[in-house]
Image (cartoon, rainbow, N blue to C red; front, side, top):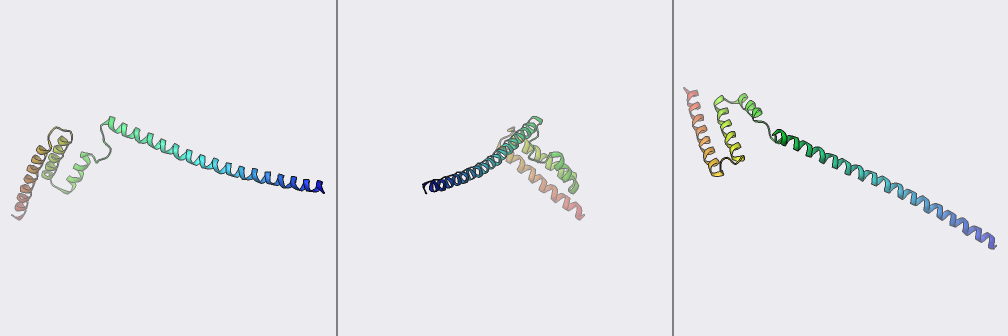
Amino acid sequence: MDGKKALYYAAIAIAVLIGVSIVVSVVSAILGLVSAIVSGIASLAVLAGIVYVAYKAGSWLLGDDGDSIGADSLDSIGSASTSAEVDAGSSRQDRLRQQYVEGQISEAEFERRIGEELETEEVDDIDRELERER
């Protein structure tokens, strides 16, 4: 009977070892898959960062900030719906804004000059309205 018992325990031990090896293999495969997914995501993030930096560097080197519509586009949009006088006023305001952004004029000077520009536009609007009524 001792031989049968030993054989029984040996069979149980082999079954446990096989079960443990299967569990270890499955866990290893899952960890490998998770590792591959995380590695892929990290690689894509790094690639996206490189592309973004290259785009920004190219925009900077070409003198285009890439975040705004160009002045030519704004002028063409404005000319489709308004008169040439209003476009001239808008371009003067754009030039003032550009001078302020570039530090050529102070904030107080910018506010004073843009205020004068807006007052001039109001007078122009009133004059145009009176012309239409005549």
